[in-house]
Image (cartoon, rainbow, N blue to C red; front, side, top):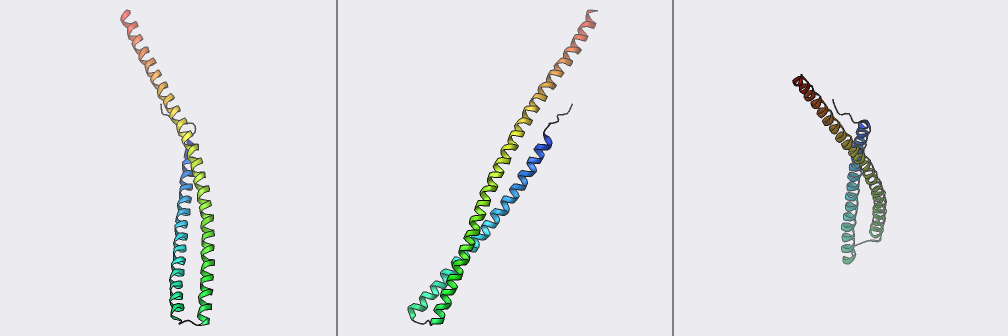
Length: 148
């Protein structure tokens, strides 16, 4: 006799769902790292450009057009940085929601796995009881034959 779990299909479905959500979470985390890298790149560019701007200003070797160009560049990079930060914030919210989904599905899966364990234990107990019954029948049959 073979053990067959009544909710095996549901358990498999939960496992598939866990794997899908884990892949989704991995993609979100990858995107987060890309966005963090973009922010660092923008900040590095801003820092380097500000350094050049300050050096030119200190030397007095800067024209009004260059000042305007620097200011325009600083503004555009700040806007770019803010957009990336907003996108990163949305990604963090997505990450949190995905982690919550994953925790919920894992919780459901664990509950089903516990149910499977209990059913398996009951199955083993039933097998043991059948075996004992069969052994009792065999031994009582031998006893009856000896008594004749």
